[in-house]
Image 1 (cartoon, rainbow, N blue to C red):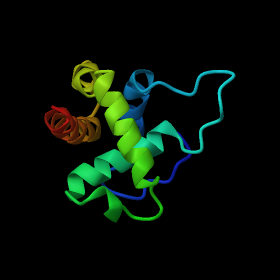
Image 2 (image 1 turned 135 degrees about the vertical axis):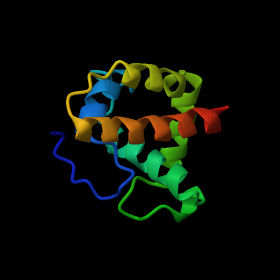
Image 3 (image 1 turned 90 degrees about the vertical axis):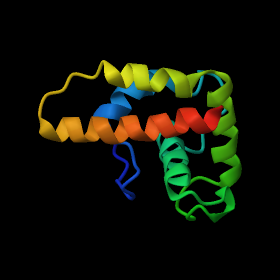
Image 4 (image 1 turned 180 degrees about the vertical axis):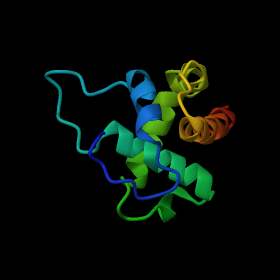
Length: 117
């Protein structure tokens, strides 16, 4: 478990986060410490796309819209959005709940990949 509370239905479940974590570069050693966890930023991107709202209308408990936009663009340039569905496709399916989580994650990531183009 990551320790972050699940606040929205668009938040990525823990099993999928563990698969995606290596694709989303963490803070490099010696650099400035991050103010927001990468998972929190990814959850904010998912909320933004699923809600279909303007970034400036994101709830106040999510990272600032400038941060969300910055990482959205950075991950787009790095090809993260295109690599995520392939990584999740290799996810081992254990029970029906995992299949539901995987299906939700795949739908979200397809939307992310489409909007990154």
